[in-house]
Length: 355
Image 1: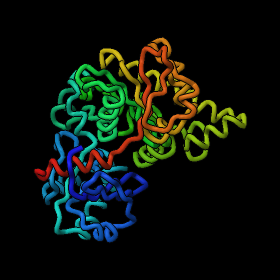
Image 2 (image 1 turned 90 degrees about the horizontal axis):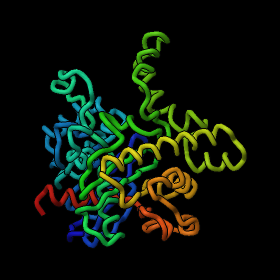
Image 3 (image 1 turned 30 degrees about the vertical axis):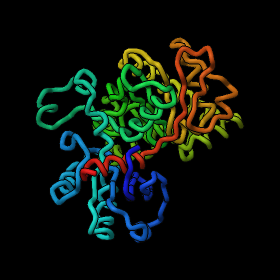
């Protein structure tokens, strides 16, 4: 990692705000407020922004025009860009004399080819309204791809990875030669595999039916797809995987169904991404579920045995990220990586301001 000055990293989610100061030596200190961050004499601020759409192909210094563009993109990812904008405004008030940089989750996926990014919809949807697949979790996938190459002691060139970011939000990404070539999230972070409270992909006709035949409002539909679906809808409760696993152990059938559906969809997505990558050298797990759930990793790997994936049960049980949990006989390495988005953001900030 290049030498860096202290950078405040602002990572705003749909329900949380994380503030970390990344120091010049690469160490990270969590702070509780912008006032506390100011005491660290930060040199610049990096803001994670989930959706950059076609407007932002790279990370940029925030000015009035950039702020207005991010605001205009809020309808594209209302659960994420709205909170990010609020955090940007608060940070600008608290730290007005340092550069602020918008770092976009979508930027890593700009390398996805048209065959993977284009929807089969009318041309004017695509050309006039930018309806296409963008991809998300790019900062996490960038870190995991870099760490995978280091753990495998291989250059990024020629390396074929499938990265499973499994947490509150979930996506599976094909990475070849260090570049994203396909991913499960699309126009928004709602597409793809089921998540904690998000549905993932469903037949578009379901939405038409609910709106036209069942009288559901657009606001209610958006709310339920984002907050009342996914693991939460299948298992009941919060959608938290640790709680669901405990309930499975107690014989809860709904909890078991939730994990069955999740494993089925994730394993299927891994197979699809392996095709996009032209094969698979390593399967990478990250995120709260990916690096925290021994059971989910084992069940997904079992479904992927036909690809040559085999876990070492003891290593899978005992490993703490970062490391390899594959059996010696496995034809695919299986890595568990703790994502470090804050370091990726800090580096992007320094690159954007020319350091």
